Length: 387
Ligand code: PLP
Image (tube, rainbow, N blue to C red; front, side, top):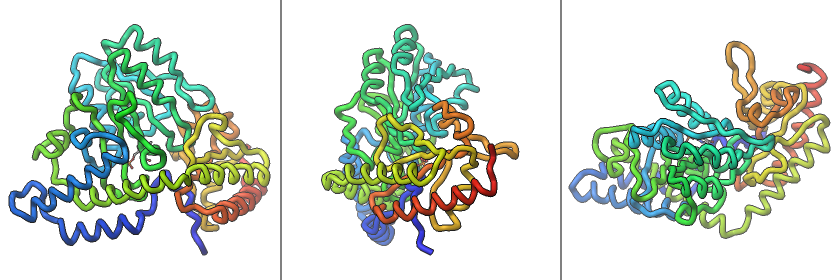
């Protein structure tokens, strides 16, 4: 059975060029970059070349990029590290649309004396910028960090990052943007944006797992969360992952080349046709976040009266990989917090399924997947209706 992989927001297949570059790095530059001898310095050189290439992907200077193990670590570094760097500030502003890396970091900080302000969002998932403006009008001195993502991992909705950044900048408040589902999918240039920190992860753009990054704007300081060794200019201790960095750099180079091919519009049309195909074939379903700007590769389709897990199992039996943000908690399946935050009607919220395309997803993949979705939903509806 052929696998149709439509779960690229969970992870992507490393590109062949990435695998090649990493294999070479594992064989040739396995030495410790902190070592003084020639082979150690060769590893250091490979690391710094890789860093420079990754900086090109996001438009920052080489001294502004901290290499981490993943976006979750980048988020921990900037959230906790910002409070430790500004001990007198006790307020974090974020939203319920965030990935659990940010949401749970906020809850963690909330239990340690930080006041967390959750900005409201509209039904499309767009954060209310006026609410942010109001908070910062009166409390900017207390706010250590505003953390709002770029593209949402479950529904693909794009937040008004430019406007949010401008509001933060004019209030003198630090702005972290979780760019994990944006970087590598869309061109990014932080040097032209009012963003102070940007987190991202290589395995979301055809790079390896185990390596990510945090852009830290020049002049700003976050306290390290992993200490010892002084690597990454004292931002993150631990021997550097040179093969990982080399793999991320290869992925960054491919992403930049792909942007110039102009294929994003074509992929967006492909995604839109897939949605229309599903709406035509399957009754009682809705596109979550429709009407909001969305990243080209993501669609979230909610099927009325069904549990997403049952659909996912049916799809998996037929070779289609997709996912849902819902999770099993205390024996019952809870709808995804993001879907709930978007006020999706209850009878749809449990049946929300995310399909996320890769650069290589073809129209044939999508038309086959749509046919399989139609069959699976029809079967599930005839046997296991929930509502
Ligand atoms: N932030 C967002 C928006 C994500 O989608 C993810 C992963 O899905 C993460 C953070 C965490 O990424 P990582 O797996 O690199 O820790």
